[in-house]
Image 1 (cartoon, one colour):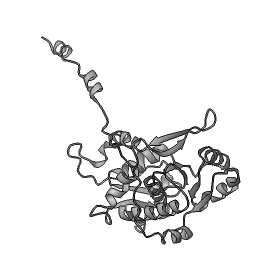
Image 2 (cartoon, one colour):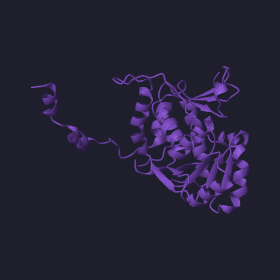
Image 3 (spheres, rainbow, N blue to C red):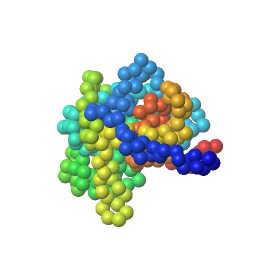
Image 4 (cartoon, helix red, strand yellow):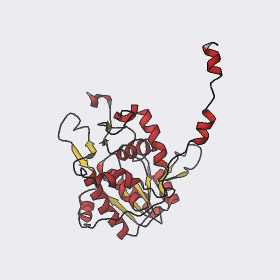
Length: 283
């Protein structure tokens, strides 16, 4: 019998493998818990770096800022308390119009651990794009930076559900510093909504896609495989020293679901590059 004949007589297990495949999804699952709280509460929470903050000015220097998982969690808890005091409840939509930076990661963790829905909006959006999404989503609070504030203020009157626009910086930090209590994570089912992200609107009005907390689980395998196992050995997968960065803005699916959240899920570092990247910056 030739090798080809032996091969052809080999049983085909593909159908059985396909039918037997399943995702192990717990009943309760929260993105902020697995991406931040569990690492922050570990013995090395204060020393394990989550976010490395870079700008074009610091690329060739050693004075860039870095933030631990514990510091990420502490500021997220402060923001969650402030959001709750201003009426945000489970299921409410909070827009995040911010670039790659530590406060953007804080905003996502704060909203997600409340059971509220985070709506990423690109800083490249103009007033019309912002207005449509804010109106359609019934957003109550917008978290933004000073760069995008002007555009948001210009359309605020068109968004009847929009109650407040908060700008990151010293004034907001002073309010957060008054929030000293521990924030208890709101239990969320794996199928509960976590993120509302809109299509580009190429063939009509943008359409909101509601992403549940459990969607992160399905993203992990593709993320790992596309990044050459992200520094894991593919066997024990106990340790990795990888530092991740993506040029994709954290307002896009590619930057949020395929960069920020998976990196934090594995307790690794991600670089937040705030500024326009160009090839000459790398040299």
